[in-house]
Image (cartoon, rainbow, N blue to C red; front, side):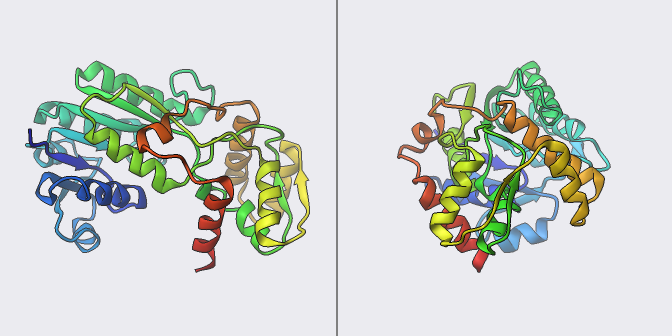
Length: 289
């Protein structure tokens, strides 16, 4: 049976990777890229049908989702004119009206019970999808290794590696691995309703030690309190709001919100994940380009 797949946020790195994986497995004619900037999407995704995909317009989304069987809803960026939860509801409502039969949604680790404020929109989106009556899978992605935009570049340049997450564990994996898994769930005939996608558990101390080995640098490793870290971030130029957000993420990790041992990610990918060293080398290579 031929399926029609659609991907929101198609011009982002995650969306582009998902579409690339889909295109390796299904006919291009069965893939639809939804994007706010359709001209940009057409340039980035040659051979793929592009339709308007602004999260702000339910009416536009309904038209764009006509004929779609399965949809990947990539969570939007918070802090925009239209709230993230409203944007997500626009997509869900449009999908229901258009007759979409399945939604895969990129959610937050343990979204149903996570204490972090970062999880609220995801928890509410999951609830809205459940209430829609549309079949679903929640892709609760842990943390991208590429997200460590402070610690990894600091290590490369032999500068202090600073954090306040203590011994908290993170399930780091590469963004492309989460995206490939999303595509495979979308194509699955019998997907689970919830996936806790994660790499092996590591701490920031593990990250620092591995970076020292890979870079051959002997940078200082500084495990600070949240308050010390916040003050340090402000002192080097971060706004109080940004500093609070960075420290809030560190607190979340310290308290165990990203601790996960499910094994869902390699199982869906169908192969073992790269070693931590191999994944870090890939990120370092990208940063050096």
